[in-house]
Image 1 (tube, rainbow, N blue to C red):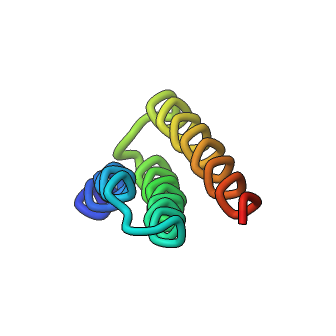
Image 2 (cartoon, helix red, strand yellow):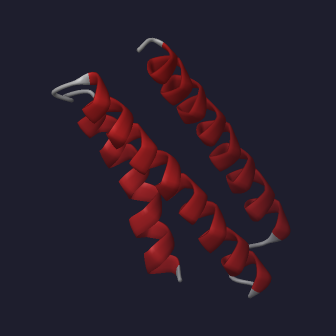
Amino acid sequence: MSKQLLRAGTSIGANVAESQQAQSKADFVSKLSIALKESAETRYWLKLLNATGYISDREYSALSLNCAELERILTSIIKTCKSDD
């Protein structure tokens, strides 16, 4: 599970970085949408790690809040880009 968390969590940043070199607005939105999905997956793995005792409630709470904030930011950027069309 921790490997899955690492993969999903690092994919968020990789897709955001890749979006900075997007070839079009659609490509930009696509990369950020993938980052958003990876953030949701990251929260899923955090939930499982917490449920199985690998991370504490305190760690889970802090990390989950960070993921939720990141999801709000990404959602806002995606919606703004789509409304500009």
